[in-house]
Length: 107
Image 1 (tube, rainbow, N blue to C red):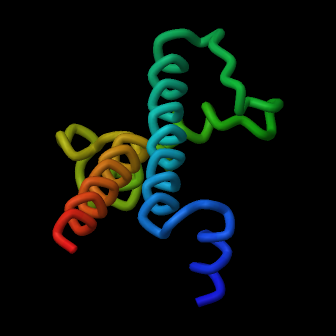
Image 2: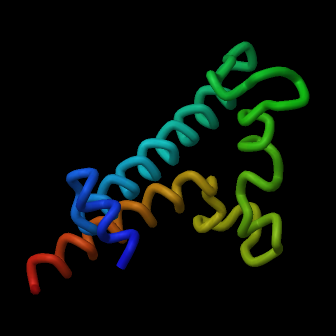
């Protein structure tokens, strides 16, 4: 396909590109966890993604939307599953990366 040809021209195969995207997603998720934890511990913390009062990633991470399962009422706020979205993102990117590696080895 056209996309496969473009990746090959750039020196990537589809597995390498997929794993690269997983690493980028994992990095962003881990940074979001760091920002959330740091903002909870230190009210003076300013993240790189906090542009101004109206564009602040730390405000979003600390808002009710930052823990989507409790926000949607799927779990209680005291539930063990009431974790930051970034933690679930980190787990997701790790799992799909591992699954891709396993799938590549079985081919």
